[in-house]
Length: 124
Image 1 (cartoon, rainbow, N blue to C red):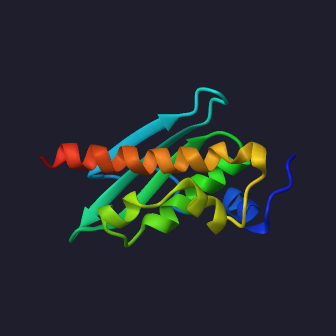
Image 2 (cartoon, rainbow, N blue to C red):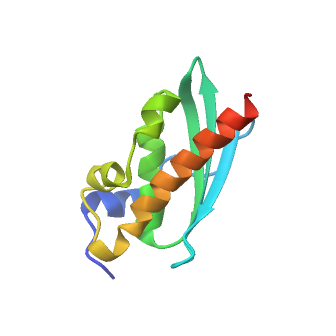
């Protein structure tokens, strides 16, 4: 098993915001075809800010931890603020990821972008 930071292990063993989000304003799912990791992110927006976020991830410990951290990072942000989050931000918040697991933070960035696009499509 790769060497994970204490923060990665904590988010893997005790994921935040895991599960489904009833009455979500947008839901998006992305998959990494290379490794098969898959993440679904659901958000609820109130007064222009992400008021709730839930995820479900099938994948390795780093993918689950990255998804958990992603929900923590986007909560309370505007959609514009959330859209600026990058994979490096997720990896840094996790205390770093092994080089061969950086794709997990890319998956997190991709799902943020996808759920924002879905929200915008739903509210047009």
